[in-house]
Image 1 (cartoon, rainbow, N blue to C red):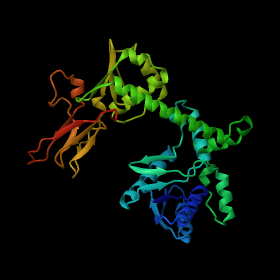
Image 2 (image 1 turned 60 degrees about the vertical axis):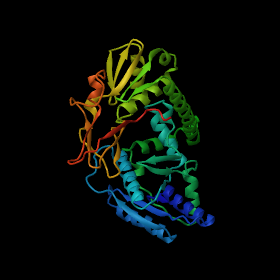
Image 3 (image 1 turned 135 degrees about the vertical axis):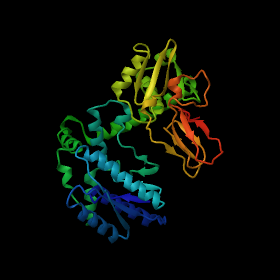
Amino acid sequence: MALAVSGGSDSIALMRLAKCWVDRNSTGLTLSVLTVDHRLRPESAEEAMRAGEWAQAIGLRHHVLAWEGEKPETGIQARAREARYGLMALWCRNNDAGLLLTGHTLDDQAETVLMRLERSLSPGSLAGIAAEGHWNGLRLLRPLLKARRQALRDYLTAIGQDWIEDASNADLRFERVRARQALNGLDGHGVTPERLAALAEASARTGELLDRLTGTWLSRWLKEEDAGICHAPKEPFLALPEPLQQHILARIVGHYGGGQAQPEPDELRRLARWVSEGPVRCTLGGALMGRRKNGFWATREAGRIPPEPLVIPAGGSAVWDGRFRVTAAPGASVMPAGNLPVPLGADVPAYVRRAYPRVELPEGTGQDAKIAFLRIIPI
């Protein structure tokens, strides 16, 4: 099991509490402490070293992971987060660690919800930070999500443990810092971190309900073809409340768009209206959609499929474009068919054919490629 430890109070508290839990329960678990040096500030290397000293002082192994290469000029925090989790996920895969713990707190949750309130009212967005999650196949656990930051600092002070104050936490260029400061002035209006965290929990429950209802509707009404196109009836769709319509469309676009992008709420509202009026065809998030008298269909927008071929690995199977599982000889290349022939019936439209996978086998291979369509609805 790995711990994400930056050296700040939240992650240092996580490290000390995790060590106490393992010692008291005699689990035999091995804890590894990971610190990412983003190399965005001159003092970052020294801070990573200090975090390592604190980890080693209580008998934990410490590893510094450096974010190499050029750094972005904009969107720094988002890019740093992607780099941080990418580095830690890679380390965990290479070192057989199946779980990563992070030190997110109730304060982090409140800040996240406040930021998202500015641009979204969807339950999925307002659910904020999940207690459990995944990053590139790595399981994430956030055990301190109900704890206040000040309570953790009080705990560290009581046991004589120092922590690092990150200067960037006061940099108003960053949205999270602005949200943190805004929260300090909202207590008098009843907008407390606890209430925002409660909103996140309620939104998560609403999102789970919408997920279940979406799955039920899709399993009953959506008809999918192996060629990579689906059909939905108009009247049962229009009979649904608008939030459920948008959830269904988000699932369809997410799948048939190859998982390229999550549509914005305004885009989904317009798409829900499009089902009953508007142009015959439209595109959104990499999906191509069309209206018919009694319903609508969705398939992949061929021109949005990345042109780089997918090479089948040694296991002989891989997922292509988020829609097809391709089983073929290792080394085979998979790419969009475009205007080249593919093994589909004559009645399959050209726009579906262009987005279908074409498999080129390695030289000297006589094995046929087998293609199985990935269904949008888990059975």
